[in-house]
Image (cartoon, rainbow, N blue to C red; front, side):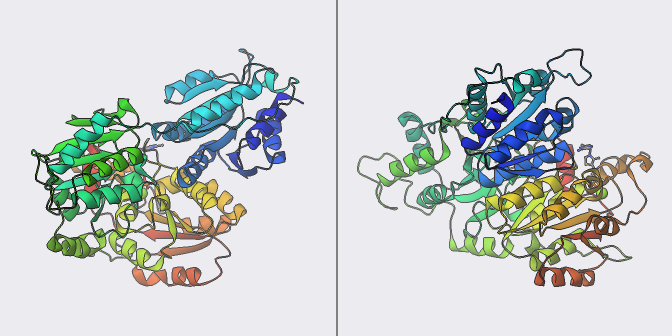
Length: 556
Ligand SMILES: Cc1ncc(C[n+]2csc(CCOP(=O)(O)OP(=O)(O)O)c2C)c(N)n1
Ligand SMILES: [Mg+2]
């Protein structure tokens, strides 16, 4: 058996059942072997799209995503998606064909490309080691790494002995030390207004975090990538950071203890530190010790798995006895109150906890719809069981802030690299992962046209997806960035494009929306069989930039 076939079948044997990619001669046999081994192959139209689909699929399922690309340009085309995945610590295995001939026109330095964007580089070295090499790369990916596995063409074509598959297991979670658990329990015992901010590393850990939050009276928030984690909890403040509601920002700023759970507490999540009051004690829990304090000074860093740490700290607090009864010998007597929680606060969160509850002046008119009015109307129309994927740009806060999602798996935010043009592919990967939910892609006109080739993928796969384009006929982020300085803006403005017609050309139902009343066909589509995907070209107002964008530019 040739190495290409053995590796493909071997990976399928490890449980790889979904593979994204674009096939050329260098990954043809490998891809067919994966299919022969039982995997579903999802063909993208551009490698950046393929990599992002695999990334989004991995985020949505919590499993290792796999993408396969042709040598040379296949890999370079995929690099933006690989960079996004690497920066997000997505478990992703990139199967990259490699031409070993240094004089070949296809030759690129695969390992250097991987390293340049923070991905791990590995290689299938020889026919004898091929399966072990593939297993090792898969195991590295399982440890939340993006791995580029180079598959040299000469090794792929060589014969090897097929080998039975050995399962690869995830490493055991990092247990926190007893000392660190006691320290965090001590901080929470003394907390009067604790707030938990859960990040990517806390996805899937709702129950343990809620238990601990109940024990110490903490309010709950997430970073943008974990939006939805605490959906429906009466103490949920939703997203912390640029997207935070005025109420959430006020309450987080008022916290005396902030605990980041699997959350880097970076400039986005903490608004450059402005969400941290001068009185706040900041603690951070992360299974990667290098992440502790990496973005800002912290008072306490706990190296440990989120679930293990939360469980151990909750047990330590439980030893104090029920609320109001500090255990004998306990020095701190704080553990009697409801922490930050009160009936008054519960009511405020219920009444003002969502962006759509915050009053605004609707600026719709003159054939353009206010993106806030559009977003609220769509939030009402779209089914609750949805997966939302958001591209980058000035518009991105509207869907992120005004739309609810059913849980953290229902929000796919591929924004670590802040590349535009990835949102549609994110929605495709998430849609493949969760066919039970309606995938909704929110794009700007710039990102939509950059990633336009994947509209064909949506139609070909028969995904019942809704694509919403916030169309301001511009690179709005740049218009609003430079407009106030009086700079010429012609280079970032475009003539009107009929994106609904473009969608129809790809096999979508296309709707142009200029006011809320134009959404009737959307209601009909949602109520119908959804046989074709839907593209909504919303001609939005763009008088001024979004408030979160101003914040974001401070990070440039
Ligand atoms: C790949 C890539 N190229 C360029 C940029 C710089 N950039 C950031 S936002 C933006 C404009 C995006 O336009 P659009 O998708 O229409 O969204 P809008 O800002 O208008 O809401 C650009 C060009 C980027 N982030 N990524
Ligand atoms: Mg735009």
